[in-house]
Image (tube, rainbow, N blue to C red):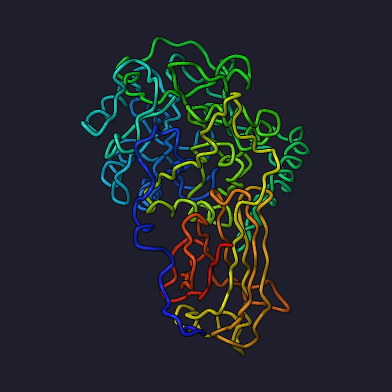
Length: 504
């Protein structure tokens, strides 16, 4: 397959296929592979709830599982479902047992269970009993009532951590009102290989334009203010003791929520729109907050089809938990898969040093500043092969061999993000492009190399032929055989590209 006289090597050195980041810093120093509504098998409104997607996520290396807890129909037990929708429930105990069984199959590093709590105190006590009985010594409890600093992934190996709001009051049930326009639903829909990942400015403008047209959406628990709650008896103390990572918002709006409190750490949740607006007005506050505390970002309410968003807005501001719908498909999820293939796929990726630094003038990294180019990556796409083995001979074209072309680019901070493409090679199952592309990188630490192969179709939409997203920080110079993945993120058995990477 090699067009030149060299020995083809695998994509990464052996050491980089294993955990190689320092794992002894506090949890706030790491990006953490995070799921959203981890129990849903499909869309956000009417799909089944199950432990199957939870198991799949854990096997892929996801480290944060989200469960929405509601009383069952007889109010004597706990179900997991997306509240105020038509999703069919699954029992909490089934989900917890599956988490215990599969938590550390892909990685020994800690699993965080984020809970949306819609329960009465008696059911909270029942949850505490279930969680304690099922996880036992695997559960992590803080030594004092409040953590002053998060432990490290290394110190929390094989441990399960519970994170939710301290349960002082009970969520008042509110009727769900579906009020998303057809245009919004269409805009959330992804094509066969996914819509292009939106940039920061475009998504901000779209959200501002549509904000006033939206009705009440399905809300995240952390989004609800005290006005949405009604007083109830004090919560079960045994349930409260389970909460190792406390979530919630402070008074004083966003500025108050982002205040760094000495000797206290917490988790804050923001929707993707709230993050975009916060990044626009409080960018350095976000960076400073995430040096010590955890920030979780979750998809906006109109993503009924379980699509996703641009994760780099969160990552470049230090957000550790960029929560994705893992059952969705498309380019945004490919980025997530690729990003967390780093550090041996263990689900924890050390944040770049520049996001953790404070200079002598107490200044932190400003994501809005123009940065100089740190590295230049040259990528040569030689050729590809394997489609004849993984696809039927009429899959791309009934009467002739396919016309493949490759898209190559960078996903990262806005200044680095770009896509380029080769010419199409007509009627050839083993296309040879031999084209080189150059990418200037201001933040190579966060950059992903995006690769997509498509088959040109003059009369219809181009067909999808494979994709890969590779962390630039783990690329090694030289000629590499790069395996491609299908649109669900599963590796093809045979399809590969021969490429050369060079840093200058």
